Length: 234
Ligand SMILES: Nc1ncnc2c1ncn2[C@@H]1O[C@H](COP(=O)(O)OP(=O)(O)OP(=O)(O)O)[C@@H](O)[C@H]1O
Image (cartoon, rainbow, N blue to C red):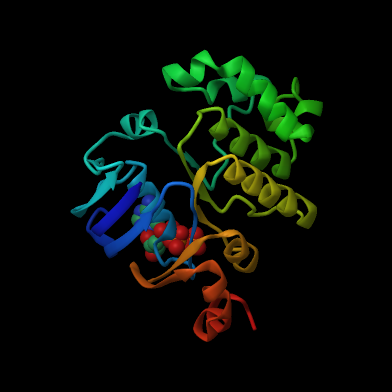
């Protein structure tokens, strides 16, 4: 579904990704793990067209997308949930959700999708008329995820969806990811919560210094000594 081949990218003169190869197949949850500064967020930004690679290629459903603008990538069904929340703080929960429907198709289904999101996230339903800026950090995180889902993605890209959340909310976010995956959504995620993520993931990639150093099934990575030592704090 999505494939990166030899992708190099970075900021100004500094190359951060030194030739990244990875793929995500239809229906999979794929996790990208690695230490701070390894280049995970940069990889996500490059896939979504916020950064353009200096070399290499990115294909989505057999079409090259690495030269496309981010709105063209969204139109193809790739929707990113950014690490920073990026909400319209003066607008209500409902209005923020409605703005998540960006493509013509998503706009046509937005009332129906809104009902679905309010069912999936009861906390947002309770606060649907509250201004987003007055919600707690965890609630804003939920809203960011729900807003991305309003865009009817085929491939959902999550950057640290559980960052800064209280443990019960972390569980709620993982439950939602499991739910939407069960409904057929393909997910590529970066998460600091490595153990829980690899349990959920079909496959994982380990990134070190801008390169993929290892890939395996989620369960196998959980048992890999190097991964356990470096990322599971044992
Ligand atoms: N806007 C930017 N301008 C210049 N350098 C940047 C920018 N954003 C990130 N970098 C640098 O790129 C490198 C990779 O950062 P990136 O955010 O991709 O890492 P990460 O693996 O997501 O790390 P973390 O787990 O800490 O979020 C870092 O050295 C970082 O300082």
